[in-house]
Amino acid sequence: MASSYFKLDISERTETGTKGSKALRLEGSIPGVLYYSGEKNVNITVDKSVLFHAMQSGQRIFEIDQDGGSQYTMIKELQYHPVTDAIIHIDLMRVRRSEKMTISVPLVLIGEAIGIKEGGVLSQSMTQIEISCFPTDVPEHIEIDIEDLEINSAKSVADIKIDNEDIEIVSNTNLNVVSITPPAAEEEPEIEELEDDEGEVEGEVEGDEGTEGDKGAATGQEGDPKDRSEEQSGES
Image 1 (cartoon, helix red, strand yellow):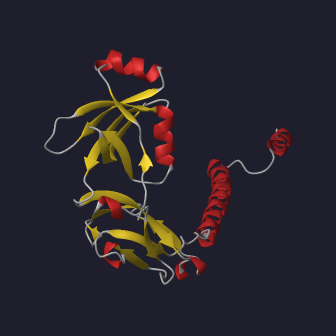
Image 2 (cartoon, helix red, strand yellow; image 1 turned 180 degrees about the vertical axis):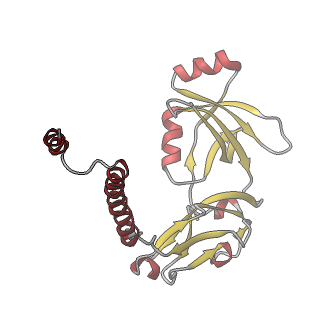
């Protein structure tokens, strides 16, 4: 649980549209929108370096100054440039510390599974989990112990244990989180089939030689043609 929040400095902006947003980006700022249920959306801008440090802080809830007082917000959505992957737009959503919120937090595997030591292959199906909690209780991550995980076994959301009673798991409890499967078996060469193929080739060669002999017998041309020529001369 975070005892303090990263201070995210935001400013309201008047420049809107593609042209205005492009001008802000050239100045090193990220255009965005601040949402809050039941209130009008506010167009904002955030300094690129400030946003970078906020995201690197590991926190999910940030403190902002709005309407003369401190408010709390979370990142709702980030838009990235399709080529450079640079952040080009940000959506923030205000939250109240006295109201529960739904948020996704990272899942972290703890321990070395027995199945891995036995040569199994680990596969993590989920890297995040949805929880419901107060903004003051948002954890940096949720842990799941996999030390007792054997080959051909798995753990689901239902196996995740959270000590804080104010944190409720929202994700479906039947969803698979991590599993361990046997290693892929190596295919052995089919030696018998190769031997059969060689036998077939030898048979074909022998058959061809026999055919040539048969052709000679059928035409009656046995022996050397030169010898036959001498025999005919002697007779004459």
